[in-house]
Amino acid sequence: MAAVAATPRRIGFSRRLSRWDVKVSPYLYISPFFISFAVFGVVPVVFNVVVAMHSWHRRLGQGDFVGLDNFRWVLEQPAFWTSLQNTFSIFVLSMVPQLVLALFIAAILDQNLRTKTFWRMSVLVPFAIMPAASALIFSQIFGQFGLVTPLLHDLGLFEDVNSPFFADRLLSHVAIATMVTFRWTGYNALILLAAMQSVPRELYEAATIDGSGRVRQFFSVTLPSIRATMIFVVLTMTIGGLQIFDEPRMYDGTGTGGPNDQWLTTVLYLFDLGFGEWPDRLGQAAAVAWLFALVIVVFTLVNFLLTRRIATSGPARSRVPASVTRRLVAEARAAVAAADAEKAAARASGGPPASDGRDRAPAGTGGTGR
Image 1 (cartoon, rainbow, N blue to C red):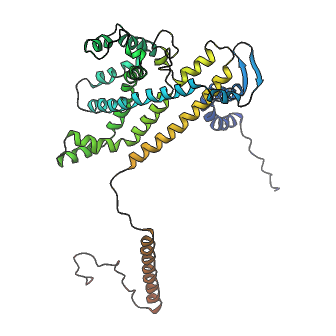
Image 2 (image 1 turned 30 degrees about the vertical axis):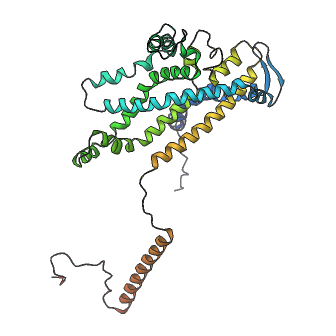
């Protein structure tokens, strides 16, 4: 009989569609994020470069190409350097108390408290308050007829009738830093609390057996165990603290950073350039954005390196020199090679292989093999 030629098996449409579904559907699931990131992230960044290189009017749109003239103009403005100083001052005054208070609150919430959920939700209440409302409340507290200014007058610390928190540069920074600390401390405390709860409880039990108290356990067990989370919190605080805008904007009624730029931050200065009383300075505002982004990147990297160095620092350990390590490894390899060569020679001669110390008699036989 003639051999019947085998016809190739045809794949059905449903099976072909199933294969396409397995290959394509994962990309479809993650595509919304990348599409939104491209539309709202990449496109504005690229467009900001175009704006920074042109003379741009708020109503008339794109003007002449000016290259780096906008950057040069911004670097020549005293207000830009003043805004940088104010931004870093407010950042330092808010970050240090914020981190200390967040650690303290997280350590308390990590204890066996009653109604834990209530207290953990309570620390998030300031974070849920609108920044504008929080800024208005604190501006009234530090105002001329608020709670703090009359008390300072009664104590004789200030003689002026006006509030020193709106006239003095440093005191205005302290007031704004208080707003930032009030809002973000609970949020960072919950992040640190999650890290503290992941610390093995056996470490605390061993420390208790060794006679360590709560304070010693906190500094010797808790803090070293949450170093990575602390670095993350410090980095997020750095990026967010340098971009402060709501609090200085709502601190007074004008929202321009004070009559003498006492609390003018860089983002507020950018906002005034782009959307203030000058309709033709969008190009300079875009240049400020790029310069400040560079400052944030550099400052964040420095902060990351410092915190990482502090986190990995510890007592000095004795290290074996590399030359000694290589010599010991070479001697061990030579000894193993000599033992293998001796075994091979014994097998070739028909005698029992020489013992290299690794072939031991079973326990309890006395080495007789019985």
